[in-house]
Length: 388
Image 1 (cartoon, one colour):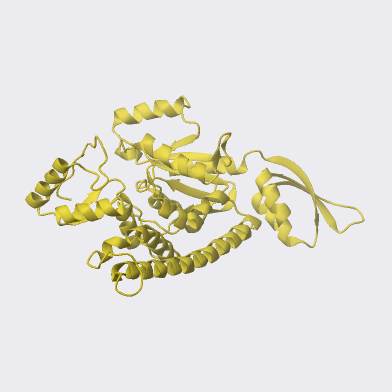
Image 2 (cartoon, rainbow, N blue to C red):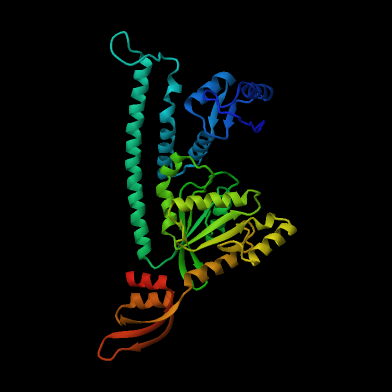
């Protein structure tokens, strides 16, 4: 990036968004810096984008176009590429006029009255609609497959922990730290597009599934929200959500609000609060000054945040043990002593109870080939045992 500045807009110009003087200033800056691309941090209509390109003699893209370009580079799986392509086509469907400005713009029709430009645009729109239809059908199949996988995981005796957060907050670094995986974790926007899952061990919990998800961003384009719905739905199946926050970012409070807004759209957070427990992992704690650490530690001590807060550094590992302890407390919280009748021959259920609960005693039942098992376990584990 060779230059960046704020352009105050008193009145939106339908043709160019900016005023004439502001466009001239952009042109001068482009010429002085020999810039080849202009990025507008906002939404441009097709006409505004075309007119700006005509006046500036450079390629112009808006916020949505930039995010789509980044997503296109990051997509690594077949599902990710499907989602990105669908979002691209949805975005470009209303911008086809830009591709055919060299053709006539007369009304369509037969004989000498019709122009070829309108006919070509309509043909392109039809091809895009057909392609989008195929992509939606494929993504619907992906959504159904994900739904089946979620149902299978819910029947399995393992809780699910989902990492969510603003893009570049450090979710993948934390995921790698806790699981020993090597998921791509770089100082990049949207380094993770496809959800990744790994098994981890927690104190008192033999096995849990940790899920890394796509990063959120403010003003997420509607095309991306729709395309990535199947991926974001993974969050709704979680038993616990870990909201990873870049606490060193000056805009961390605003980023938190953006994440919670998207969680609200997914139905995870409602008017009565969150439907599942949420832990805030205040990441990049090591980047704070001693003064900032003391200030934020005081906030945590006085319980101002509505969620449990754990300061961590995913890069150094500081605080991750404390995070695992908090996760364990939530997953095993509310444990109660229950008496169950289990057939002696059912070794699978007996082994499951020993692995996921605290077996206090086993007593054979007279006249029956069964055991009365006294076990302390959480309501969530009891539900899993019942499904098992």
